[in-house]
Length: 282
Image: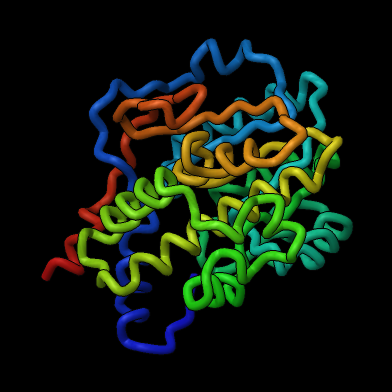
């Protein structure tokens, strides 16, 4: 996600690698089937679908939700966090030339993701000719943002649209800081927190911008639960720009409460995993 130009950043990357696949501790009752309110809801212009990155059940339930809507006739573009936006040309060529999802993954996928979890969504896009759109901040831009701030990765019009010539909203940065510190096992060097907050915010804004770029086509975003939050994530930034879009955010959560983060929440069983912080606490 960021450059490894010094030992502090190398430590940050090591911590991030440890917690990438982690999720919240499970305290809610897991569900093996989709909630009725998710199945019955109408299709919005923008549907934000979250994930705990390594939770297989969450991936299956999310795919089932999307499959049913597509088979009923919905034809959205699918924006995916898993593809870096700088690789959009490769992704577009792969979608035109590949017969199956494995080919798309081989041509346009990177090394950071368990791609078999995303195979069904990619195959669905190929089968129904749904555009696949790369949504993540590129590595080069992430490094620039850590160093120079959120506005550094955007063109002047976007800086104006998202008010990036002003300080970021305190309510957003406060929550993002808490999440990033906790997500790095409370061992993140203080000097790195601000830069990583900026990178996380920049990712959310880029996803919001890319979603808007697909209009008038409807859009589904496939991304982590933190990104699809409507209070501080992509949903927040979508609402900072006019015209307003009808939007629904859905968290796929391993226990825990909603707390205003999502419009809907699907509780899933916790994935079996080792303590993600164990090796960095030694």
